[in-house]
Length: 109
Length: 242
Image 1 (cartoon, each protein chain N blue to C red):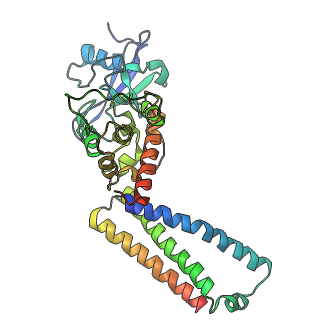
Image 2: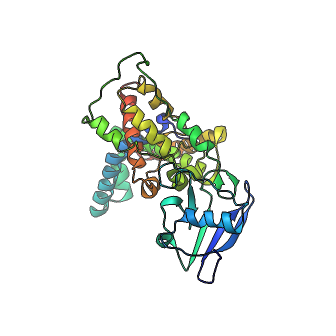
Image 3: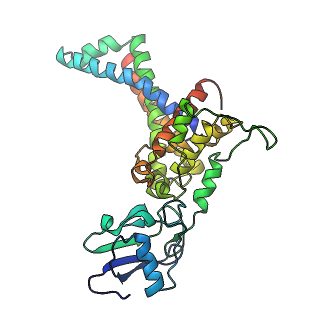
C-alpha cells in the first residue's frame, strides 16, 4: 500500500513544509499584530516572486503530503486498494494542487 | 477432578473459519495454573473435541499463543492469576490470522510473510569453506542480538493494528527477522532484503504504535527493528540504491 517512493515523497514533503509552516505562522502573527488590512497584504503579495515561490512550494508540498496521507487513511479505514486507491490518491493530490495554486495565483499575480 | 463452584468461568471460542461463538466451561482452580493448563483441562475432562496447539510448554516453541481477555499471550507462560477478572477468563484464537478450528489459528500467512520479507539466509560460503568468525562486539552484532530470540509465536502479529487494517503488511516478526539478516555480515545480498521490505506491504507501512513491543513475550523490540529498516532503506534511497 505504501512503498519506499511514496514514503520518501511524504517524508521529504514534510521536511519542506516545516519551515514553510513556521514562516506562514510568523507572517500571520506579524500581519495581525501590525493590523494590516486585506488590501495592504495584497499590496505586498501582488506581483511578488518571493511570495509566489513561498506559497507555490507550500501548496506543492501539501498536495503531495496530504494525498499520500489520505491514501493510507482510506486504505486502512475503508479498505480501498489497488488501482482505485491509486486513482483516489492522484485525484486528491490534484484537487489540492489546483485549488491551492488557484489561491496562490489570486494573491500573487 | 471435577469442576466446582469455586472454579473459573472460562469462555472459549468454538468454531471454524469465520463462524463460531464462545462456549463457557467451569474449570477447577489450581496452584500455579497457566492458561494452557486451563485449555488442556477442558480438552481432557470437559470436551475432547476442543482443538488447540501447543508443544514445549516452556515458552520456547511459540506454538500456544492465543488471545486471553482480548490480549495476545503465550499461554504456557501466562498464569491465570495474572489475567483473571471477576473469576472469568476469555480465550480465543490469535487475532489477524484465519481460524482453522476453535483455538488453532492458521499460521500460514504469518510464515509466508517471513519469506516475503527476505527472511531467508543468502549464503556467502558453502559447507566446504571454513566457518566465518564474527566478533560479538561489533555494533551490528550487538544490535542483531536484541532481535534474534524470536520464537515465532505470532503474538506481535496478532497485536498489530496495522496488520488488522492492512492485510498486505508483512508484520513485526517478519520485519524484525529481515532486520537481523540485513545486519548479518554473512548475508550475501542485503540489498535483496531492503528491496523485499520496501514493497507495498513493507516496513514503511508501520505506524510505530508499538503494540508488538508491548506484547512480545520475550521482551523483544520489533518496532526498533522496523525503524532500523526504515533508516536503512532511506539511506539506500539517497545513495541511489534499491
